[in-house]
Image (cartoon, rainbow, N blue to C red; front, side, top):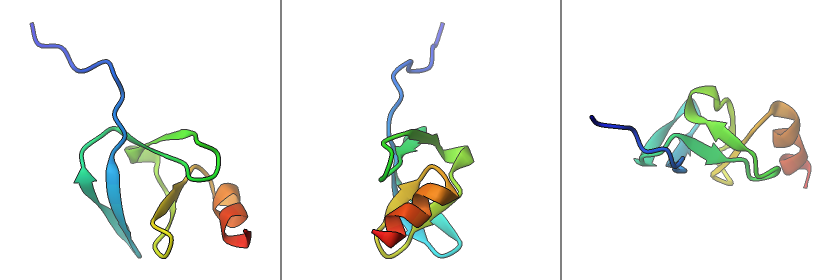
Length: 66
């Protein structure tokens, strides 16, 4: 019986203005501010300039404000 890998693996992405491209497959990314794991299907916030993912709009604003 085949089983999926129980260990979560972080994806590596290239962020673009209207989406992202998967460079290294995985099931999540790690928020650049909080360190929270964000599943790829729930990822909505990122910075193209900084190439960083964020778990929420508030965390994205926090990162942009410095």
